[in-house]
Image 1 (cartoon, rainbow, N blue to C red):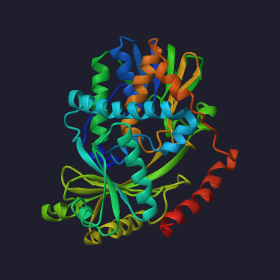
Image 2 (cartoon, rainbow, N blue to C red):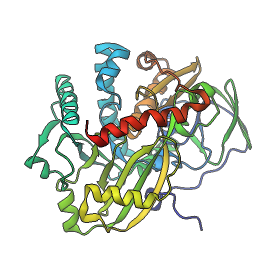
Image 3 (cartoon, rainbow, N blue to C red):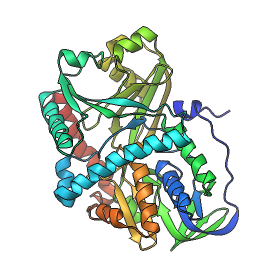
Amino acid sequence: MTPPLTWYHATASAPERDRLIGDRSCDVCVIGGGLAGVSTALHCAERGLDTVLLEAETIGYGASGRNGGQVLQSLSADVSVVERQVGRDGTRMFFDMAREAVEDLKDRAARHAPDADLRFGYLHATLNERQFDGMRGVCEAWQAWGYAGPKMIRGAELREWIGSDRFMGAMVDPESGQIHPLRYLYGLARGAEAAGATLFEHSAVLDVDGTVVRTAGGAVTARTVVYCGNAYLGGLVAKLRAKVMPVASFVAVTEPLAEELAAKLFPQDVAVADCNVALDYFRLTEDRRLLFGSGASYSAITPPGLEGTMRRKIARVFPDLSDVRIDHLWGGLIGITINRIPDIGRTAPNVFHAQGFSGQGVVLTGLAGKIIAEAITGDDSRLKLFEKVRHLPFPGGPLRMPALVAGMAWVKARDWLGI
């Protein structure tokens, strides 16, 4: 018997779906069965479009069944980076759309996935004054845009939020949080099918000729094609692949913690991430396990001795857990762009794509699906804002991964040194 892929797969269930056999036609063919693809299929089907989705493995096999389940406001990119791309007004629009995306997630979870364990409260924890000053700038920008919820804390007040001496301060965000992402995705998939979409599994796309999408079992002729493979798209579209770097991230889930210990470590039961570039992120699951994710491997290779590495990282944050048992351990790929802004747009008038969510995919994939469905049905005003963002290919051609590894070594060292 094949073991569950992740703790999420061990605690969620979904029906087996057919593979594509034979030829068919439709309005929209979505390639990829993660959060971006299923969200796109759901939004398209709700707008009355005959929609077919093709997934190479099973729904949620990729990043959507492997991520940290963190529900985050805004983008991964620094505000200044976004402003250079789209101007001050455009940056405000991006922020408003990201806020809208969180509200949409609340609504989708309530309607389609009430079992997804959606909880709110988030700590952006800082390890030094440089990071604290950076988060204070973020906090002030958000407040200036009308979101009064976040606040900066430090010292004794910080201990009221997290039982760790590793951090010196934090930004508290009451409207970010956590979710069981695979249960959420499974709920969206059920909602898409109820709205009329057809979802196929084990139907890897081999070739796309215009809007004719071929698999080993058949072909789909569509009016519109949407690529939602992200880090798992492979070489299907070379110019999309060049703008996204697949980066490996790793997650450990411990044995259940004693109720008293869990309350000591997470007094407010919030999700947490530090502010390093290769960050650690962690939270309690509904059955009081610590779910701990850690910094990306920019070589996309699973390092040797991963369990020992994760155990040391957990103990560095929570010394009380130095001997905790790890029950689940896995890795997966996320897609990052150079500027950390999602790449949502068109490669042709009737060919769309959504990729490069850069660690914010739980929330922003839903926004991507909504914006693409709007564009397909005649309103591309919000898509055009994303298309203003210039997404450069990662430099180096065949050497791009070694180049990124080398470049990130200094960034990681800067975080480690606290400078």
